[in-house]
Image (cartoon, rainbow, N blue to C red; front, side, top):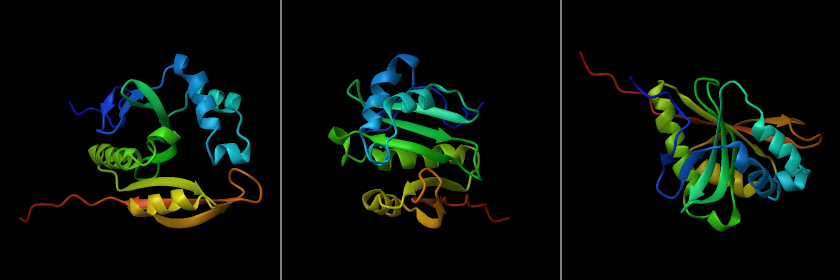
Length: 172
């Protein structure tokens, strides 16, 4: 039997391991995520992050990004979504940025999505987060539409999509 996509187990991705989120890891992880932009800039408190991380949601898959046994980030994915998974949150802590972690996570998401024959990867990025928008574009995402006032009034989130290669069929 094929393993379901985004199974709650350790996934070794090279520059980082994905480890299922535990209740014990939430308080410190929530504080570290809240200290990062865009969440710091819009005022998402550690307590709000902790509540969000702790809340079980259908189709929610949450992981700690670990390198050499230390937490270096947080990942939340929603699957199923629209013909593929939705990257709800990827937070890579400053000491781990620039080491190919986002690329490894996106490549893993694409491989996991392929297990279900999915066609798309989805995410939203804050309009003023130019660095993240450029990074996602470099990873094959295209901007689909602005979503005004989605997270914060007066600010847009940019909905982005990466279309996955279609499986080839053998000639008959």
